[in-house]
Amino acid sequence: MRNTAGVATRIAGQKVLAIVLAGGRGSRLSPLTDERAKPAVPFLGTYRLIDFTLSNLVNSGVQDVWVIEQYLPHSLNDHLSGGRPWDLDRTRGGLVVMPPFSSPENEDGEFAHGNAHALAQHAPLIRQFAPDVLLVLSADHVYRLDYGEVIEAHVKAGASVTMVTTELKTAEEATRFGNVQAGADGRVRKFAYKPEQPLGRTVTAEVFVYNPEVLLDTLAALQKGGQTLGDYGEELLPALVGRGDAHTFPLSGYWMDVGTIEAYHGAHRDFLDGRGFDLDSPDWPVITASITRPPAHIEKGAEVSDSFVCGGSVVSGQVVRSVVAPNAVIERGAAVTDSILQPGAVVRAGARVTRAIVDQHATVQVDAQVGGTGNLTVIGAHAQVQSGARVSAGLHVPPHRRVKAGQEDRTTVEPE
Image (tube, rainbow, N blue to C red; front, side, top):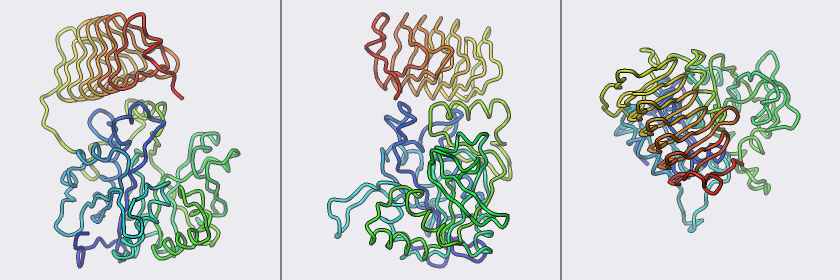
C-alpha cells in the first residue's frame, strides 16, 4: 500500500477512504460485458460508466480511492491509467487498484461472492488505513452527487451507515433494488432487499457511508455466526438497520442504474431528451481518459437529427435520435435510428440499424438490417452482420460472430 500518512482526505474533520466496487460481471448487460468489465462499458460514446463515480469523487474533494476489481480487470485498468485522468496518480494516496489476491490464510485465493464479501476480504487493509469514514460506491451508475454533503450528514447523525436513496418512477421497479422506508428524521425504519412486494418507490442508490469500526465488527460477527455475506442487502444492511442508527440521504437529481440493456439504452435517451444533467459543467465536469481525435466529419448529403456525434466519427448517411461514438462510420445510404453505435462500429451503405446497440468495431455490411420495433437488438464487439443478413428485433449476436444471410437462426441468440 502507498504511504498515506499526513495527506489523507479529510471532510467534516474526518479521515475519508473511498472504495469503488468494480468487480462484478454485469451479466444482464451481456453481450456488452462479454469482453469487458461492466464499469468499462462506454456511455454516450465518450465516457465509461466508472467515469461518473470517479468524477464525483474528485469533484467532492476525495483523493484516497481504492478500486476493487475482479472480472476482466485488464479492460478496466487500461481506462483507469493509474488514476492520471482524474489527477489521482499521486505519490501519497490517490488511486489504488485492488485486484483479487491470495494470502497466507488462503493461498488459493478466493473471488468475492458479493459486495459485502468484498469488503470483508479487505478488512485488514481497511483497518490498517484507519479511516474515520468509509465511503463505498458502485462503479456502474450514472448520477452527480457531492459526497461531502453525505459525509457531513452522516457524521452529524452519528449513523452506523448512511444510505443515499433515490425515488423510482414506479414501485414495481423497486424489486431490483434495496427498498427503504425512513421516518421524518431520516432514520431507516424498514429495509428489504429485492423484495417481491416493494416497500415503495424509495431505493438505495448504491452509495453508502459507513462507520468503519461498526462495519468491520458487523462483518466479522456475521462471518463468525456462519452467515453468507454476499451482497450488502442480504445480511449486512439488515444487521445495521436493526441497530436503529441507519440513516438516509435523499438524492434529488438524476440517477440511473444501467445494469440492463433496456436501462442502458434508456439512459442514453434521457440525455438525448435533456433529462440527464450537464456533462460539461465547469464546476462539476465529468472526467474521462482523453484521447485526441479529429472532429466528427458530417459529409455532404448526410442527415443528422436529435443525436450525439462524437469526434473521429464519419457520417455520410442518416442518423436519427442516436449516439455515434468516436471513430464510428455510417456510409452513404445507410440509416441509423434510435440506436447506439459504440467506438469503431461501422454501418455500410444501404444498411438499416433500428433500435439497436452495435458494439465496438462491429460491422453491419451492405444492405443488412439490424433490429426493428420491439426489444433492443445487440451486436457484440467485432461481430459482422454480412451483406443482406437480417437480425430481427430483440436478438443478440455474440462478440466476433459472423451472421450470414439465410443462416441468421444459427448465429443469433435469444437473450436470457
